[in-house]
Every structure is written in structure tokens, then in C-alpha cells.
Length: 149
Image 1 (cartoon, rainbow, N blue to C red):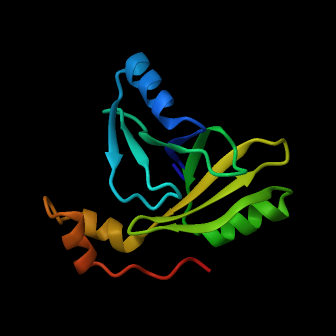
Image 2 (tube, rainbow, N blue to C red):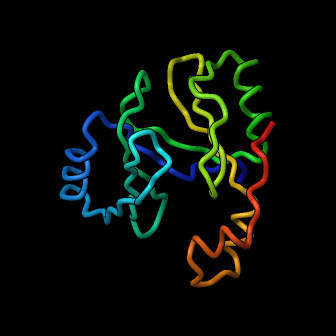
């Protein structure tokens, strides 16, 4: 299947309140990431067991509140440009998530929001066969390729 949904993310004006609600409602396992690259440094990974996981973060200033689904693409620049030519609005242009990949947030012509995601291929290679090595050792063994053009 091409372009699967791979992640959902809650952009909340009150992440702590949202985490308490969803942890009780759905028994999700939540893990706070230290030194997260998001603007306030706080990102929580949602571990659901089976199925697509996600995250919870503080709403970006002037950004949408609510759940944003992410779809995997092979070429983020091409997909972002195509969305624009089809009448979409680029809400957030290509942005790097260090050691993981890149994303864009688009709004379709009907007003719906979607994230586009391109994995960092070096990190995908590092994840396959690196076993129990830590992220720090992965960083030393995998160069981060340049941002998609």
C-alpha cells in the first residue's frame, strides 16, 4: 500500500490535561521524551501496542489545535509542491525532526489538515540491525542526510 497513515499527533493548548484524559480513557502508555525538538521541549509518545501510535505536544502558536494524521511519502518536496498545485495551502513547510525525518503540514482545499512525513533513510537503516544500541550510538553510526529540497 502506498502512502499509509503512520502517525497521529495531538496539538493541544493543555497537553497535561489531554494526557490525563486519554491515559484514563484509553489506557495508553505515555512516554515523555527528554530534550524534544518541539518548541517548548516537551513531547509525549503514545504507545498503543498494535496499530498506529502517535504523540501529544503543546499547540504550536497560530497552529491548529486537534489531532493531525501523518501520511508517509517517498519524496516530501514533490508531495508538498503537488499539494500546492492542487489547491492546498502549505501551513508549515518542510521541517526536520533531528535523527528521524522531515514533515510538512498542509491544508486541503476543503480546510482539512494533514501531515506529510518522509523518513530519514539513514536512521531507518540504523534501526534495522542496530539491536539494543542507544540513540547516541546510532547517531555516531549514521550521518543525517540533508533536508529534502
